[in-house]
Image (cartoon, rainbow, N blue to C red; front, side):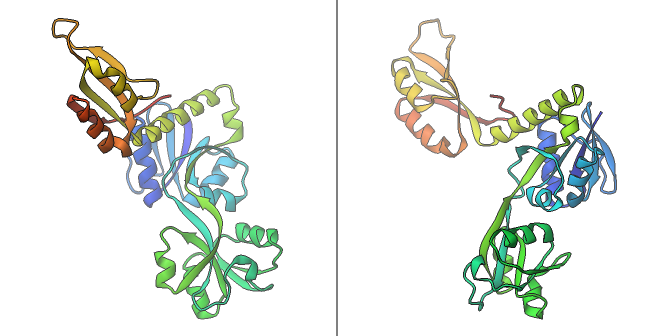
Length: 289
């Protein structure tokens, strides 16, 4: 069985487990304190701190894993990114006090003290823009550092920016954009036994992500308006047209198509204008290309 490293707790853990479940890989007998759990028939989930997952992958203790791109960058470990899972979105940002004269990262004076829980990424960023700084590693609550005189600048994860505003801080630069990623151990991915299973897992998760933005639409439409209907619901490779069993050669056909979720309202309005009836829209669990 392939070992899949998943975050043990927090929002990242909840969303990762939900994604795997939607792909048909539910963690069986999962309890809050469990360190391992079967994940479908072919995978074994191991639950770790999110920041430890890159190291477990690089060491070969896990074959596949899910964690944030920010934590991968900070770890410096050699792992292969397979897929952006599109949740846990945030950014690693440089921030200063609201009353600071600094407007951009390039304005930060040399030897400024920077508080962060991402010392590797922070040092690389300031080295890249040619500004020597003194990095102060903190395990959390970096936002308080400028108000206690511990540091003049912080580098921290930002989602909505509300936490910065509450703490009277202002964002001046973005170091990197982050989200949850599906990762693989290089050796496992290239292993002739493990590689195919990892690629199948990647395809399954990708199909769930792809399906979130789509809906399946079915409608009875006038045969004479079929050319116009095809323009409204082109689908992935064109709509599927099915004869309605009303004696054959009737005036109506059934049109089935995959459409963008954010265009459902507009699509239904246009179909109704063409005389469509019996319109049905359903969610899609998985969508393979």
